[in-house]
Amino acid sequence: MSPRGVATPDVRERLFAAAERVVEKGGPGALTSRAVTTEASCAKGLLHAHFSGLDEFVAELCLDRFARTAAKAQALSALAGQGTVVRNLDAVALALFDSGGPAISGLAMTRPAAALRIREALEGGAPGFTAIEEAITSYVKAERRLGRVAETVDPHTVAIAIVGTAHHLLMTNWPGSSDPRPPMTRLVAALVDR
Image 1 (cartoon, helix red, strand yellow):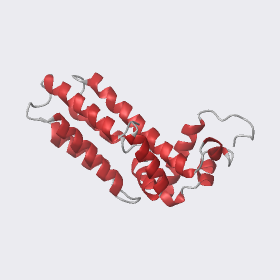
Image 2 (tube, helix red, strand yellow):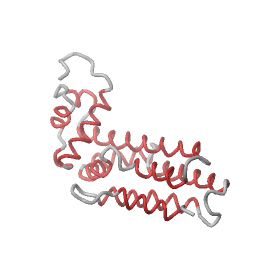
Image 3 (cartoon, one colour):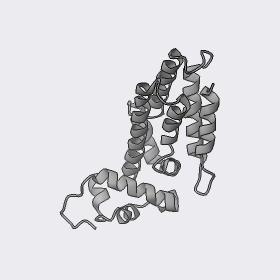
């Protein structure tokens, strides 16, 4: 445990990772500021020293994870012509399920104030599903120009299908549900595999 008055390096990420573990183990109802700080092995007041409350913390956690996945999606363009199209798209689609994606999405749904903060941030331009959709569209267009995706494949439709399916799987996956990754992988292959 960090002693009182000593700076905790990478405090946001440490708390976010701890929250993901708490929610993965116990579901959204298990998340409290005390559970997070206990899991992070840090002072009990650390979360409230960096966030105005649990709703802000949950919103920032979700937005941080959206931004990470959007950055990964934006890196897709550099992969055009490399590896396989299915593997490249699958990596981005599955990134939505990393770091407790289903559990964290469920958590946001149980906290209306956090959900509102997330929606407002996304409407204000924070990276989220729209940024991921745009990146996938650009990538599939590039692969189509290279002849690695059939001309009959519509890049925007592929992007909407991937993002929409991921969103659906995130929102309907509860603790104890089957792993959402295999159906996501099958969908990606069905959309672009030649």
